[in-house]
Amino acid sequence: MARDPSTDTLSGLTAQEAKEFHRLFMLGFIGFTVIAIIAHFLVWSWRPWFPGVGGYAELQGAVEHASQLAQTFFG
Image (tube, rainbow, N blue to C red; front, side, top):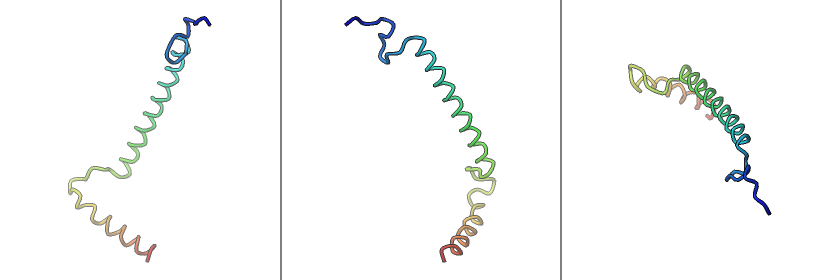
């Protein structure tokens, strides 16, 4: 059985197929990264994960509110 030098790679793809796969992979990766950055920005706008000037003490009111809310739901 003769070996085809055009597909003599580990993946079995030709150079053109490998370039096309790489282009599609990079487009998908860049798209995913852009969506992740937008999602992180939106979540940061909604609820920043670093404390403000007052530190984590600012969150005490939110914890008390969440506790009261949980008590109303779960008795």
